[in-house]
Image (cartoon, rainbow, N blue to C red; front, side, top):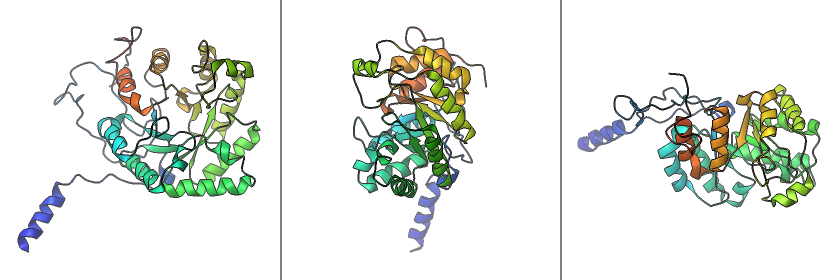
Length: 318
């Protein structure tokens, strides 16, 4: 018996210390603060490749250079795949987003496993824009309440609020923001210039529907910031997705009047996030597919690039 006790104690002592877990109400979009983020990465100067020039990543929780990755949506994956992603690149992932209402199609146990796993790596978890569907229910007020309560129970940190398919008054949108915040969750409005965005509609059909003036996004963005929103998502459709030519003028207009740290751009295509980093530097906040996290991280670090960015992405910091 004594021998077994000694073995058990030694086994426990060899286990890595568990991560500090805080209540979901304290977990920001920028991820939960942790006591000790010291890690031995291959960039480490003494034990790795740190002697090679690269742009250092600021530690979590980040308020700039934030990277949010897509959860199961275009392809199905579960905890084993996400474990691989986070074991290898978790230091560079800030948020995980279940696009649309994808999580509602999955077993609850599987969703909880993904949420819990993300939190172990200090990654916040966001819903997609499923609120659009919730608002079409016969009793919208009751449906919204039940939806938010269930999301909080599962462990979501962030509720995305989209209106790409709805004609939705700004004041009502602000009421939704207040409602989400009152539940101890973080509201993340998704803004764009294209009505019907998010449905993989052909560029010709979107062009026929027309686009909004960028000032609409800017004016709403200012109201959301006043309402305490930490960060907004900028929808790519109509700007860099499903268009004949990119609307870079829209992006410039948004960043001229809204703080860069308050917006995140959807950029789930390498040429697109390559352009964002080239134009706005490594601190631009981006949403990409989970399969692109290595490519984007190498670009931010300045060790990878396309013809226009290779060797040209730099920073001046310690």
